[in-house]
Amino acid sequence: MAYLLDVLIPGLGHLAARRWVLGVVLLAAWFSGLFVGALALSFDTRALLPLVAVHPVLACFAVVRLFWLNRRERLTRRPWRWSLALVPLVAVVLTGSGLVFSSAVVRPVLIRSGSMSPSVVTGDVVLVQMFGPLLNGVHLGDIVLVMHPQHRGRLLIKRIIGLAGDLIQIRGGELMRNGRRLSECELRSLRDHETHQPVIERLEVLGHRPYLVWDRPAVRSRAIDVRVQPGHLFVVGDNRDRSGDSRTFGTVPVENVRGLVTVRIAPVLTNRVYQAPLGARRSAYERCSSRGRASRTADGG
Image 1: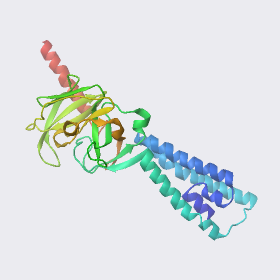
Image 2: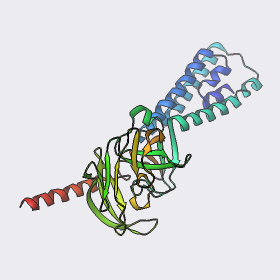
Image 3: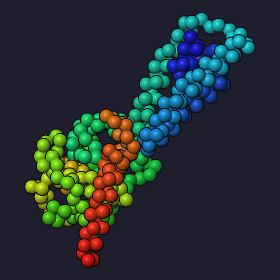
Image 4: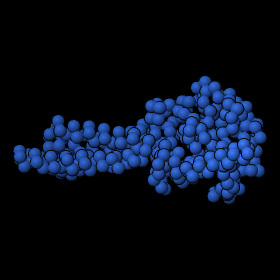
């Protein structure tokens, strides 16, 4: 039974065998490894392999160590009922650690709206780093999970395009920040795969982060002229004409940000949302840049 407990949670088997020091050390190493691995996973999916390896490596070490101790010291066998009493503790520890990770470290979130297409589409499962706003603050271009300022309890996924002091304007359907257009260039015309409405795909760049946006050619947003107040953010969806955001409900307090969306984990495991296939593909950025260079060359000629 002690071996089984060590397989389930490294360290519990040693506690069952009354090897208190090593048992506590193994438990601490297991919790620390999962915590650090989950935090790293929220930044880059390459941390998935070491995170998955934490448990089997520690479990193998614990079982081998317990086997060696038993051969060397002939550990006194405890009644199996006494060891079985630790099984509920296993369930409590696993449940508690899952709740802690999902509420304080990283949380998987199912996307139920197409307001962030094509960066994040309906049905995607993204990993939200809950420590993000506390550790790194928020930056231009971040995709965040944010509380609706008018409907408490309703969470939205949006992109930050304005920080405190920024002037956000919409003129003739063009979104501008501090007098500069966000759109770099128009890439192509296509159809929204959910609504089948014709949309124009454009490339935008904020904070050196390229990303794709969609808007419908027949829709023109009303004129907006907003100065972002201190302690507030201006957030929008990448699918501009299907998104309810700061253009309708105003700026959002920074404290309403619940986490940073950094990784998509389903349906396809990818890199950060700012890289393919989420956000703007490198080829789209290069295509847009080449168009700009060609245009400048033609003007110069």
